[in-house]
Image (cartoon, rainbow, N blue to C red; front, side):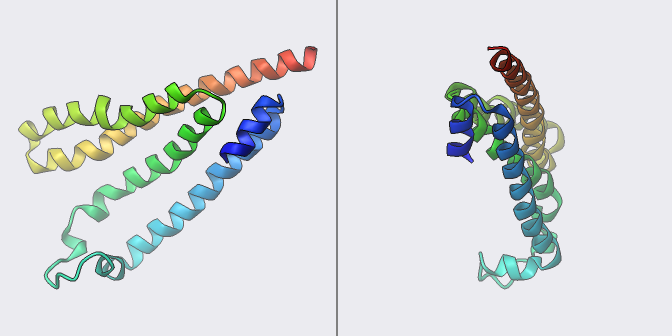
Length: 157
C-alpha cells in the first residue's frame, strides 16, 4: 500500500490514493477476519501451535474473550499508520503507534487493576486499543478532508 499511496499522493491523484487505501483496508479486513474465524472455530489446534503444555486450555484463557477488540482495532491501525507514512507525515504515524501503548495503555494499567484486579489488566488492553482507534479515526477523517481540499485545488489549477 505504501508505495502506491505515496506515489499517487505526490502525483496529486487523490482518487487513486483513496481507492488504494480502501482496497488495503478491505484486504486486511478479510485476512484478519479469516484468522479470527479460525481462532474462534479451532482454538485448540491454533493453541497447540504455540504450546506443548497439555494442561493449557485455551477456552479457559482470556484470549478468546478479549482478543476480538484488539484484532479489529489493529487491523485498521496498520493501514492508518501506513497512510500517514506514505504521505510524509511520519510524526502522525509515530504518535498514533505510541498513543495506544503509552498514552492510553499505561494510564489504564495504573487505574483499572487497583479497582478491578486481574480483570482490570485484561480490560485495559482492548480499551486502550479502542480509544486509540477512535483517535486514529478522527485523524484519518481530518486527513481525508485535507485530501478533498487538495483535490479541489488541483482541479482548479
